[in-house]
Image (cartoon, rainbow, N blue to C red; front, side, top):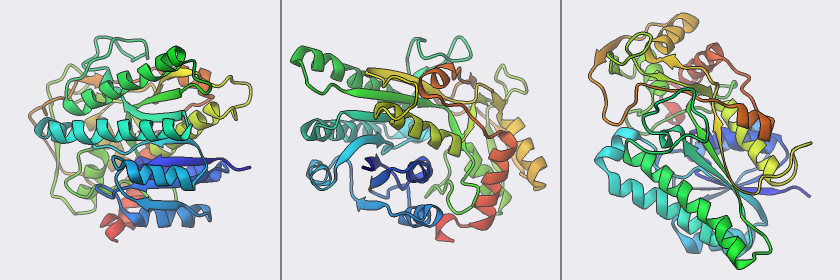
Length: 352
Protein backbone atom coordinates (compact mmCIF):
# COMPACT_ATOMS: atom_id res chain seq x y z
CA UNK A 1 0.00 0.00 0.00
CA UNK A 2 1.24 3.48 -0.87
CA UNK A 3 2.27 5.61 2.13
CA UNK A 4 0.85 9.12 2.48
CA UNK A 5 3.13 12.00 3.45
CA UNK A 6 1.84 15.26 4.95
CA UNK A 7 3.81 18.25 3.63
CA UNK A 8 3.26 21.53 5.49
CA UNK A 9 4.16 24.55 3.37
CA UNK A 10 4.08 22.26 0.37
CA UNK A 11 3.13 24.99 -2.12
CA UNK A 12 6.32 26.91 -1.37
CA UNK A 13 9.63 26.84 -3.21
CA UNK A 14 11.28 23.85 -1.52
CA UNK A 15 7.95 22.25 -0.65
CA UNK A 16 6.69 22.12 -4.25
CA UNK A 17 9.93 20.57 -5.52
CA UNK A 18 9.79 18.02 -2.69
CA UNK A 19 6.19 17.15 -3.64
CA UNK A 20 7.43 16.33 -7.17
CA UNK A 21 10.13 14.01 -5.84
CA UNK A 22 7.78 12.34 -3.32
CA UNK A 23 5.19 11.67 -6.04
CA UNK A 24 7.90 10.38 -8.39
CA UNK A 25 9.07 8.06 -5.60
CA UNK A 26 5.57 6.56 -5.33
CA UNK A 27 4.23 8.38 -2.24
CA UNK A 28 0.83 10.04 -1.96
CA UNK A 29 1.02 13.67 -0.86
CA UNK A 30 -1.24 15.84 1.30
CA UNK A 31 -0.30 19.54 1.45
CA UNK A 32 -1.33 22.17 4.00
CA UNK A 33 -0.31 25.73 3.08
CA UNK A 34 -1.73 29.15 4.01
CA UNK A 35 -0.32 30.63 0.75
CA UNK A 36 1.33 33.53 2.64
CA UNK A 37 4.45 33.20 0.46
CA UNK A 38 3.35 30.67 -2.14
CA UNK A 39 0.84 30.02 -4.91
CA UNK A 40 -1.73 27.26 -5.53
CA UNK A 41 -0.52 27.38 -9.14
CA UNK A 42 2.69 25.68 -7.98
CA UNK A 43 0.74 22.59 -6.95
CA UNK A 44 -1.20 22.51 -10.21
CA UNK A 45 2.15 22.44 -11.98
CA UNK A 46 3.47 19.74 -9.64
CA UNK A 47 0.48 17.64 -10.76
CA UNK A 48 1.25 18.41 -14.41
CA UNK A 49 4.93 17.44 -14.03
CA UNK A 50 4.18 14.15 -12.27
CA UNK A 51 0.77 13.33 -13.77
CA UNK A 52 -0.38 12.59 -10.21
CA UNK A 53 -2.78 14.28 -7.80
CA UNK A 54 -1.93 16.32 -4.72
CA UNK A 55 -4.50 16.65 -1.92
CA UNK A 56 -4.35 20.35 -1.05
CA UNK A 57 -5.82 21.98 2.06
CA UNK A 58 -5.54 25.76 2.30
CA UNK A 59 -5.00 26.68 5.93
CA UNK A 60 -2.58 27.54 8.71
CA UNK A 61 -0.63 24.81 10.47
CA UNK A 62 -1.28 26.58 13.78
CA UNK A 63 -4.96 25.61 13.36
CA UNK A 64 -5.28 22.50 15.54
CA UNK A 65 -8.86 21.84 14.44
CA UNK A 66 -7.77 21.76 10.80
CA UNK A 67 -4.87 19.43 11.57
CA UNK A 68 -7.16 17.10 13.53
CA UNK A 69 -9.42 16.87 10.47
CA UNK A 70 -6.47 16.14 8.16
CA UNK A 71 -5.20 13.29 10.35
CA UNK A 72 -8.74 11.91 10.67
CA UNK A 73 -9.33 11.92 6.90
CA UNK A 74 -5.92 10.72 5.71
CA UNK A 75 -3.77 7.82 6.83
CA UNK A 76 -0.55 9.80 7.28
CA UNK A 77 2.70 7.82 7.63
CA UNK A 78 5.09 10.76 8.11
CA UNK A 79 5.17 14.55 7.97
CA UNK A 80 7.64 16.97 6.41
CA UNK A 81 7.37 20.34 8.13
CA UNK A 82 8.36 23.24 5.84
CA UNK A 83 5.73 25.79 6.90
CA UNK A 84 7.46 28.81 8.40
CA UNK A 85 8.66 32.35 7.88
CA UNK A 86 12.21 32.33 6.55
CA UNK A 87 13.82 35.74 5.90
CA UNK A 88 16.81 36.65 8.07
CA UNK A 89 16.48 40.43 7.62
CA UNK A 90 12.72 40.44 8.17
CA UNK A 91 13.10 38.33 11.31
CA UNK A 92 15.30 41.05 12.84
CA UNK A 93 12.48 43.57 12.23
CA UNK A 94 9.59 41.25 13.23
CA UNK A 95 10.92 38.77 15.81
CA UNK A 96 7.54 38.17 17.50
CA UNK A 97 5.89 37.22 14.20
CA UNK A 98 8.68 34.72 13.56
CA UNK A 99 8.44 33.13 17.00
CA UNK A 100 4.64 33.00 16.81
CA UNK A 101 4.53 31.44 13.37
CA UNK A 102 7.50 29.08 13.47
CA UNK A 103 7.22 27.81 17.05
CA UNK A 104 3.45 27.59 17.31
CA UNK A 105 3.03 25.82 13.98
CA UNK A 106 5.52 23.18 15.10
CA UNK A 107 3.85 22.78 18.50
CA UNK A 108 0.41 22.35 16.94
CA UNK A 109 1.70 19.89 14.34
CA UNK A 110 3.53 17.73 16.89
CA UNK A 111 0.55 17.72 19.28
CA UNK A 112 -1.79 16.53 16.54
CA UNK A 113 0.74 14.04 15.19
CA UNK A 114 1.09 12.55 18.66
CA UNK A 115 -2.69 12.44 19.11
CA UNK A 116 -2.97 10.58 15.79
CA UNK A 117 -0.11 8.20 16.64
CA UNK A 118 2.04 9.53 13.76
CA UNK A 119 5.58 10.04 15.06
CA UNK A 120 7.76 10.20 11.94
CA UNK A 121 8.83 13.78 11.27
CA UNK A 122 11.27 15.47 8.90
CA UNK A 123 11.88 19.04 10.06
CA UNK A 124 13.07 21.79 7.77
CA UNK A 125 15.91 23.29 9.81
CA UNK A 126 18.72 25.51 8.63
CA UNK A 127 22.46 26.10 8.66
CA UNK A 128 21.68 29.31 10.59
CA UNK A 129 21.65 27.17 13.77
CA UNK A 130 25.46 27.12 13.58
CA UNK A 131 25.54 30.87 14.24
CA UNK A 132 28.78 32.59 13.23
CA UNK A 133 30.96 29.51 12.76
CA UNK A 134 34.54 29.35 14.03
CA UNK A 135 35.45 26.30 11.96
CA UNK A 136 34.51 25.17 8.44
CA UNK A 137 33.14 23.00 6.95
CA UNK A 138 30.25 22.68 9.38
CA UNK A 139 29.63 19.29 10.99
CA UNK A 140 26.46 18.38 12.87
CA UNK A 141 28.25 18.06 16.23
CA UNK A 142 29.44 21.69 16.35
CA UNK A 143 28.10 24.03 19.08
CA UNK A 144 24.82 25.68 18.09
CA UNK A 145 23.83 29.33 18.34
CA UNK A 146 21.99 31.91 16.25
CA UNK A 147 22.71 35.43 15.03
CA UNK A 148 19.10 36.37 14.20
CA UNK A 149 15.50 35.55 15.26
CA UNK A 150 14.90 33.33 12.22
CA UNK A 151 17.87 31.13 13.12
CA UNK A 152 16.88 31.24 16.79
CA UNK A 153 13.38 29.99 15.95
CA UNK A 154 14.92 27.00 14.16
CA UNK A 155 17.27 26.37 17.07
CA UNK A 156 14.46 26.49 19.65
CA UNK A 157 12.39 24.07 17.54
CA UNK A 158 15.33 21.67 17.30
CA UNK A 159 15.58 21.71 21.10
CA UNK A 160 11.82 21.21 21.44
CA UNK A 161 11.93 18.19 19.14
CA UNK A 162 14.86 16.67 21.05
CA UNK A 163 12.64 16.47 24.14
CA UNK A 164 10.09 14.21 22.44
CA UNK A 165 12.01 10.90 22.39
CA UNK A 166 13.12 11.51 25.99
CA UNK A 167 9.45 11.80 27.01
CA UNK A 168 8.76 8.57 25.07
CA UNK A 169 11.35 6.78 27.22
CA UNK A 170 9.84 8.11 30.45
CA UNK A 171 6.34 7.21 29.30
CA UNK A 172 7.41 3.83 27.87
CA UNK A 173 5.72 4.81 24.60
CA UNK A 174 4.81 1.95 22.31
CA UNK A 175 5.59 3.98 19.20
CA UNK A 176 8.51 6.37 19.85
CA UNK A 177 9.23 9.57 17.92
CA UNK A 178 11.70 9.43 15.03
CA UNK A 179 12.75 12.90 13.90
CA UNK A 180 15.24 13.98 11.25
CA UNK A 181 16.39 17.61 11.46
CA UNK A 182 17.54 18.52 7.97
CA UNK A 183 19.88 21.50 8.23
CA UNK A 184 20.14 22.89 4.79
CA UNK A 185 22.24 25.52 3.32
CA UNK A 186 21.29 27.83 0.42
CA UNK A 187 18.75 26.36 -2.00
CA UNK A 188 18.82 27.72 -5.56
CA UNK A 189 17.75 26.52 -9.00
CA UNK A 190 14.42 25.22 -10.23
CA UNK A 191 12.88 22.13 -11.78
CA UNK A 192 14.45 21.48 -15.17
CA UNK A 193 11.04 21.82 -16.85
CA UNK A 194 11.05 25.52 -15.93
CA UNK A 195 7.46 25.22 -14.67
CA UNK A 196 8.11 25.50 -10.91
CA UNK A 197 10.69 27.67 -9.17
CA UNK A 198 11.26 30.33 -6.54
CA UNK A 199 8.64 33.08 -6.67
CA UNK A 200 8.80 35.37 -3.61
CA UNK A 201 5.68 37.52 -3.22
CA UNK A 202 7.53 40.69 -2.24
CA UNK A 203 11.14 41.82 -2.53
CA UNK A 204 13.28 38.66 -2.67
CA UNK A 205 15.19 37.92 0.52
CA UNK A 206 17.39 35.30 -1.13
CA UNK A 207 20.17 35.95 -3.59
CA UNK A 208 19.18 33.88 -6.62
CA UNK A 209 15.62 35.20 -7.16
CA UNK A 210 17.01 38.71 -6.86
CA UNK A 211 19.64 37.91 -9.52
CA UNK A 212 17.00 36.45 -11.84
CA UNK A 213 14.60 39.36 -11.34
CA UNK A 214 17.38 41.82 -12.22
CA UNK A 215 18.32 39.71 -15.25
CA UNK A 216 14.72 39.61 -16.49
CA UNK A 217 14.29 43.37 -16.01
CA UNK A 218 11.95 43.37 -13.00
CA UNK A 219 14.57 45.08 -10.84
CA UNK A 220 17.21 47.65 -11.72
CA UNK A 221 20.23 46.14 -9.96
CA UNK A 222 21.38 43.69 -7.32
CA UNK A 223 22.69 44.95 -3.98
CA UNK A 224 25.55 42.79 -2.72
CA UNK A 225 25.52 43.09 1.08
CA UNK A 226 29.09 43.30 2.39
CA UNK A 227 32.31 43.47 0.39
CA UNK A 228 34.78 43.50 3.28
CA UNK A 229 34.41 39.98 4.66
CA UNK A 230 37.54 37.85 5.06
CA UNK A 231 36.70 35.77 1.97
CA UNK A 232 38.05 35.17 -1.52
CA UNK A 233 36.66 38.46 -2.89
CA UNK A 234 35.25 40.17 0.23
CA UNK A 235 31.67 39.02 -0.38
CA UNK A 236 29.82 36.41 1.70
CA UNK A 237 30.51 32.75 0.99
CA UNK A 238 27.68 30.22 1.08
CA UNK A 239 26.99 26.59 0.22
CA UNK A 240 24.50 26.80 -2.65
CA UNK A 241 22.55 23.60 -3.26
CA UNK A 242 20.23 22.83 -6.16
CA UNK A 243 16.64 22.66 -4.92
CA UNK A 244 16.05 19.34 -6.74
CA UNK A 245 18.99 17.76 -4.88
CA UNK A 246 17.57 19.20 -1.67
CA UNK A 247 14.10 17.82 -2.45
CA UNK A 248 15.57 14.37 -3.06
CA UNK A 249 17.25 14.62 0.35
CA UNK A 250 13.80 14.90 1.94
CA UNK A 251 12.63 11.79 0.10
CA UNK A 252 15.71 9.93 1.36
CA UNK A 253 14.85 11.07 4.90
CA UNK A 254 11.25 9.81 4.56
CA UNK A 255 12.53 6.55 3.06
CA UNK A 256 14.76 6.11 6.09
CA UNK A 257 12.03 6.80 8.65
CA UNK A 258 9.64 4.38 6.94
CA UNK A 259 12.25 1.63 6.54
CA UNK A 260 12.33 2.00 2.76
CA UNK A 261 16.06 2.73 2.45
CA UNK A 262 17.81 -0.44 1.39
CA UNK A 263 20.64 -1.49 3.69
CA UNK A 264 20.07 1.36 6.17
CA UNK A 265 18.55 1.07 9.64
CA UNK A 266 15.72 3.54 10.31
CA UNK A 267 16.83 6.48 12.44
CA UNK A 268 15.43 6.50 15.96
CA UNK A 269 15.20 9.46 18.32
CA UNK A 270 16.36 12.76 16.83
CA UNK A 271 19.12 13.05 14.23
CA UNK A 272 20.49 16.28 12.73
CA UNK A 273 21.78 15.97 9.17
CA UNK A 274 23.33 18.62 6.91
CA UNK A 275 22.18 18.90 3.30
CA UNK A 276 24.75 20.84 1.31
CA UNK A 277 27.38 20.41 -1.40
CA UNK A 278 30.40 21.00 0.84
CA UNK A 279 31.60 23.81 -1.44
CA UNK A 280 31.62 27.49 -0.55
CA UNK A 281 30.85 29.98 -3.32
CA UNK A 282 31.00 33.76 -2.90
CA UNK A 283 28.15 36.06 -3.91
CA UNK A 284 30.21 37.57 -6.73
CA UNK A 285 31.28 34.13 -7.96
CA UNK A 286 27.61 33.12 -8.20
CA UNK A 287 26.66 36.38 -9.95
CA UNK A 288 29.50 35.92 -12.46
CA UNK A 289 28.59 32.27 -13.06
CA UNK A 290 24.99 33.29 -13.74
CA UNK A 291 26.08 35.99 -16.23
CA UNK A 292 28.58 33.74 -18.00
CA UNK A 293 26.49 30.54 -18.31
CA UNK A 294 23.31 32.38 -19.34
CA UNK A 295 25.00 35.16 -21.31
CA UNK A 296 22.96 37.83 -19.57
CA UNK A 297 24.19 40.86 -17.59
CA UNK A 298 23.40 41.30 -13.89
CA UNK A 299 24.02 44.94 -12.87
CA UNK A 300 25.08 45.02 -9.22
CA UNK A 301 26.52 47.28 -6.56
CA UNK A 302 28.43 46.60 -3.35
CA UNK A 303 26.68 47.93 -0.24
CA UNK A 304 27.06 47.67 3.55
CA UNK A 305 26.73 44.36 5.38
CA UNK A 306 23.26 43.18 6.36
CA UNK A 307 22.40 42.56 10.04
CA UNK A 308 22.54 38.90 11.06
CA UNK A 309 24.73 37.71 8.16
CA UNK A 310 27.95 35.72 8.63
CA UNK A 311 31.08 35.79 6.45
CA UNK A 312 31.18 32.16 5.38
CA UNK A 313 29.10 29.03 5.83
CA UNK A 314 29.38 25.67 4.07
CA UNK A 315 28.62 22.06 4.96
CA UNK A 316 30.24 18.77 5.63
CA UNK A 317 27.60 16.44 4.19
CA UNK A 318 29.23 13.08 5.01
CA UNK A 319 26.48 12.15 7.47
CA UNK A 320 23.77 12.51 4.80
CA UNK A 321 25.70 10.12 2.58
CA UNK A 322 26.23 7.65 5.41
CA UNK A 323 22.71 7.62 6.92
CA UNK A 324 20.49 8.60 3.99
CA UNK A 325 22.45 7.38 0.97
CA UNK A 326 22.21 10.94 -0.36
CA UNK A 327 24.63 13.21 -2.18
CA UNK A 328 24.27 16.16 -4.55
CA UNK A 329 24.25 15.56 -8.30
CA UNK A 330 23.71 19.03 -9.77
CA UNK A 331 26.53 21.59 -10.04
CA UNK A 332 26.63 25.40 -10.10
CA UNK A 333 26.13 25.47 -13.87
CA UNK A 334 22.85 23.57 -13.47
CA UNK A 335 21.82 25.85 -10.58
CA UNK A 336 22.20 29.08 -12.58
CA UNK A 337 20.89 27.60 -15.83
CA UNK A 338 17.72 26.18 -14.24
CA UNK A 339 17.12 29.38 -12.23
CA UNK A 340 17.25 31.45 -15.43
CA UNK A 341 15.13 28.96 -17.39
CA UNK A 342 12.40 29.27 -14.72
CA UNK A 343 12.51 33.09 -14.56
CA UNK A 344 12.77 33.61 -18.33
CA UNK A 345 9.81 31.26 -18.92
CA UNK A 346 7.85 32.88 -16.07
CA UNK A 347 8.97 36.53 -15.98
CA UNK A 348 6.31 37.36 -13.38
CA UNK A 349 6.60 34.06 -11.52
CA UNK A 350 3.30 32.21 -11.03
CA UNK A 351 1.52 35.42 -11.97
CA UNK A 352 2.85 34.64 -15.48
